Image (cartoon, rainbow, N blue to C red; front, side, top):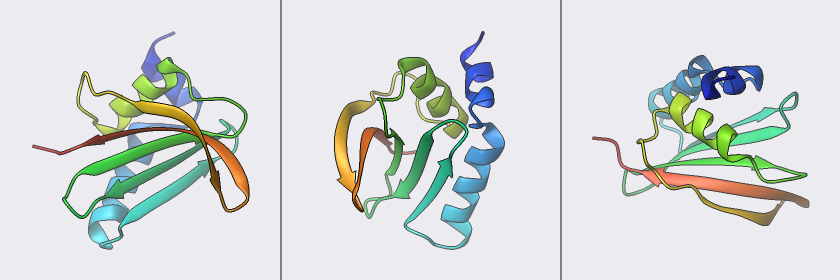
Length: 107
């Protein structure tokens, strides 16, 4: 199974990525959050003050897999060869999540 198929199976598609990007740009929001209960994933797309984009992928029970991260990065147009930071467990609003993130500047 290709990474694209794996991502589509988890609900992370180019359409979802496009919707999140559009909301971020059109409404002037600082970030957009989506929870995908069927996949057990949470996604945050953030535009930082220095105009870099940050994509965070989180899950409660375990870190997102390398295949999931590659497919999600591809769906969001993250640069090839980009490095995902961490799989660190962080607390948010009383919940504990494994968070992986990538930050990049678009050309």
